[in-house]
Image 1 (cartoon, helix red, strand yellow):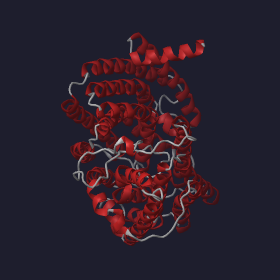
Image 2: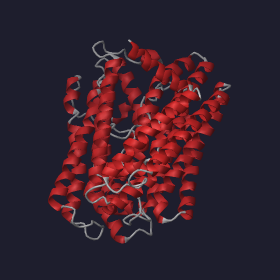
Image 3: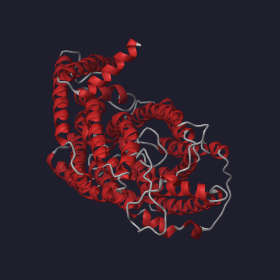
Image 4: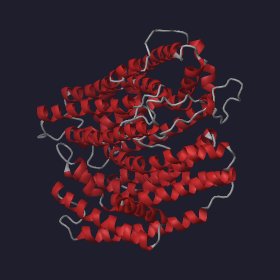
Length: 585
């Protein structure tokens, strides 16, 4: 249900949280019906290596994820400072292309089919799956190489289809120039994702989590060189950006993914894998893989259509003073950050419990886990949503203003972030429902539910585009996303009720009402405080922005906690009680 840009959600993670943090394990048994919702039996999953505990690996992954997120936001801020909003829109549009094409080629198949297949072959084959992995990597490199070459050759056609007909010709040409430099990363994105999958199957998680940081560092360094060499005296536009400026940023984007891929090779040798060219595609069982991947491909394709639609709509205002593709993407990453820190953590903890309960037919326990997840995520994310809504402009000024990214562009991004506040909770709730389906091995169901969700999202995009002006177009697209997440949650809950029986929606509704009241009180007090601070919600520079963030954020957090305790929001009371017990010890 992703509608973000810039990074593949299935590729090796960086600052963008994945759609699926766990593996959707689908059977690779040839005698099972194709296209069904089948799960790999627990006995087929290799035992954890004694030297690497789950807790230890989780800590490594969590630290890597947080560091990567921070560095990722530094990277995005540097891109904005170097390129500004006009050229930054074209760069972001071009950079979206390889991620979208990679998703269609490999992304969904990797997580849903290939990883389980590697798990099985590692256990079943006498050589630990070494020959199979060599064959898979050989075939993937050839296929990705051919596909990348064809896409690069067709770059002008691809960008012409993506950019709206009303986009200025200079803007379309700039997107094409960036695309020629950036599209080749399709090959290395796929290769690094496959290497990461091999490492994960061998119990090695650190390198795939940390390698993307190398990618970010390369681009941050390139943006720093850009600012030193070219300065910020001239407002960059599609008409005055030079070939050298394009080559520096586009080339660094390509170099970053190459460095990321190379950074994985030492770990690959460490787990005992040795590379060898082995061309035997028939031994891979491609027909079987294709039949098993069908529903995931449908899911991925639907999402890519929605991403294509939002880029096309936003291209109409790209290069102007309005918030467009770059601002939309920055805000989407902030939204996913909140979801990644809170929502994904809850999902990761609940998925094994729900999967075990579903496997044993204990659907009441699945329902209880889902109910607990929804109420916990809602209580935890509500203050984040309030902060985004009330302090959107101070946040955007603090994170993104500077260099060629003007104050006006930062304020416009803040308006988009304020609308994104309404997407935070529906996003995480819809994903919780998706994880419940995964526990029930319901990949087919997830794909079919996603179709009306994507249709609703795309219709909302074009309706909003007709109703709002250029200045609010990116904000309108974000609101359309929020609506589609809500639709997804409603449909999913209705289907789950039929699948597992009664859901305790009454308890969920009571909890959500209490959370909404507490959030409303916090929002009102936050707005009141910010109104009397310098800048009154629209800060003039980082100093005013930071004052508003610290003062307004503190008031919002304290007000929410106090209101939640008074309203007896159980999840908040439990957290505070736990903290008190820890401090008492």
